[in-house]
Image 1: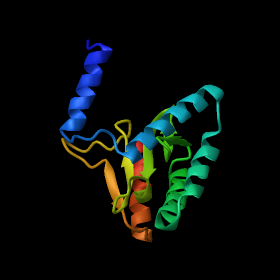
Image 2: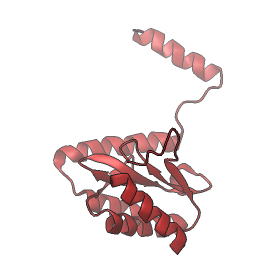
Image 3: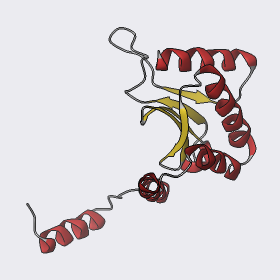
Amino acid sequence: MKNEKDMRKTVKQTAEKGLKGFTDEERDAMKERAKEMRKIEGKSDGESDALAKIAEMWGKDHTMAERIHALVKASAPELSAKTWYGMPAYAKDGNVICFFKPAQKFKTRYATLEFSDKANLDDGAIWPTAFALKELTSAEEEKIATLVKKAVG
């Protein structure tokens, strides 16, 4: 294991090579996760936390997050809302099944609805676990409801 002096040298060499560490957005997400872990110990209300994160969003992210929240709650009432790395997430028995990743959080072109390895989406040797969202129509909402039901099934 490296000592502190060796670690500083490695960090300095990495910086000199122009290699970058975590982005500001990734660091913010890690800080959010640390806050969430502290809240778990204090038994905070996950539903309120998730709704507060949705309320902070704006534009399409806000609209889609509200709609996805309603779809998940209707499709799989056994899932409990919470936050995960500062994003609205839905868990079963404490395990995150799916979460909404807003485009604005990581400055990406589109938001995503993502599923963890705890989701029961297995379909052969390869299957998608993240879905890009540019807008939600009734057709997409139906697909999301089906995916969420399968994920918890």
